[in-house]
Image 1: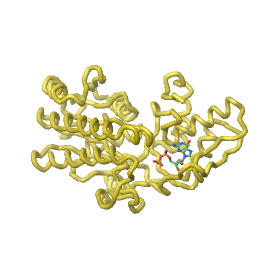
Image 2: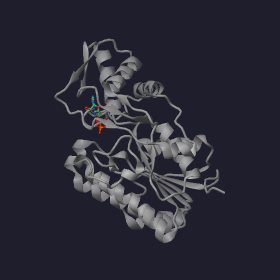
Image 3: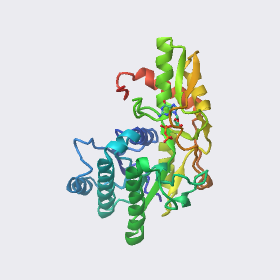
Image 4: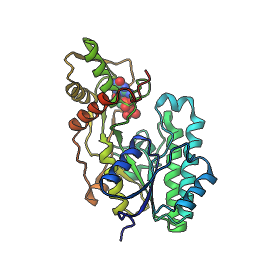
Length: 318
Ligand code: GDP
């Protein structure tokens, strides 16, 4: 029987984050009765002894490791030491204690930035470590790759059932709307909304509008996390995406429609396009029988509603 039964003690590390909170919602929605969470003030995951004490006393059976230090290109550039150290500490402490105190299954969350900068598209799992990374976030990426390898090493040496999932670009409630370091989807929601309120004649979208990106709603990601916790037990990493990408121009049109903005969209080609395409190959995931449920237009509309309802507490800064 799968260790994922409704009475299982399930620890979600990083439950204040966009993905961690979606995993908690999904577990609750599916009827899991013993979900454990700890705020950072209660449990600092970078402290080895504190993490060991937590696992020893609470004895979770399943762990979703969604805690990480994350940030945009600016933050990665300014705090490379923090990014590499904190992520290495958090994941090493959690994986080691999980194994030591008898966790039956651990789900480690990586990121698509672990893949080579010029990986063939759609990106297959076996392109990991075949070529250089994108240098702007390599501190974070190297730490995540070390996390994948830690899971694989504990599986080989100790038979520990740790799996590693690589999500595509996620969006959803609780996203970062600070224009200095937000990703494109929440940034556009904010820009179109403010242009509509201010009656501005145009919205400026960075780059040429031609790059293509894949977007997955975080509730679909959380559903995939539970699905894979039940149905996937292998050493190899596994991609999680929706299998389809859109151009930034198409994305802008969807956001414009969701917000109900009637002005023009213009492109600022002095801003970087970044990589021309980023799409994950999800054949492995599909073969297991999982598929996303939230179409992009619907997801954007619901995140816009969330943004309107939470504008006060949304991460807005600038
Ligand atoms: P990336 O996937 O790592 O390149 O991250 P982003 O989500 O930041 O950017 C994706 C694409 O959206 C790039 O081509 C950006 O130039 C473009 N883009 C257009 N407008 C914006 C914006 O307002 N903010 C961001 N972050 N990207 C934008």
